[in-house]
Length: 272
Ligand SMILES: O=C(O)CCC(=O)C(=O)O
Image 1: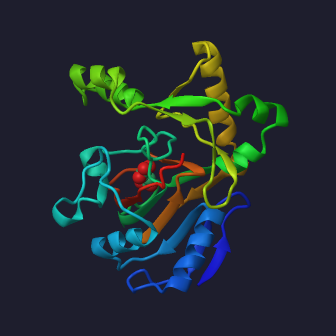
Image 2: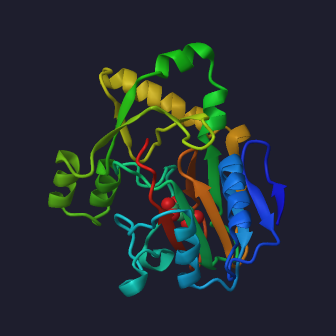
């Protein structure tokens, strides 16, 4: 297995690894180490089946059924499907499912059909972004918590006729609402990172609305500065695995034609 670093902040390509075969424990340990260090790993696996995809996910932990993406169903309901043909997009910066009490720690996404151009995915290292904050700002953020929920995405869906008023009302009322620390500590590396994102994080607890908006707006703009970002141009059969404990991402909806991704998420360890 060979690692090729993709940017100074995050991302590495893994060469010489066959995801259609059973990986031994030494290889898995090296892979997990590379994963937490580089935060996004790119592995080309054109022949990997959904069953092998799930089996690989299970080597990292329990795999989940996604909260809202469609899935393959039956024995493969842990394989969620992001298909541009049915209008599913992920074109706002986010970290996966942070509206859950235990958001997934890792997501493994496999390119099945790609547009001829466009549809890149951008990743931002929220630990590199945290490290670059001033000591004053780090002190200010210490101990703050923020509310995450689905109301923003449901509001947007409502606006475009994709959610009804009842769904919108329940998203605002109570649906999937949870507080997480604004700064989290990675359970494996011990590194701190910002744990807020523009899609699911709604406000910082205890701050006046304008102060909360200002602070979240700043943290979002700061995290997506180019020195913290890796932009992935997908090749057929790429599998990307990203660490949701230390990154945000966004899939560009700038393409024509179909883009189909299969994804498997690994449940977190419960310590946000
Ligand atoms: O399709 C992609 O590149 C990323 C999809 C995404 O944002 C997600 O799976 O959460």
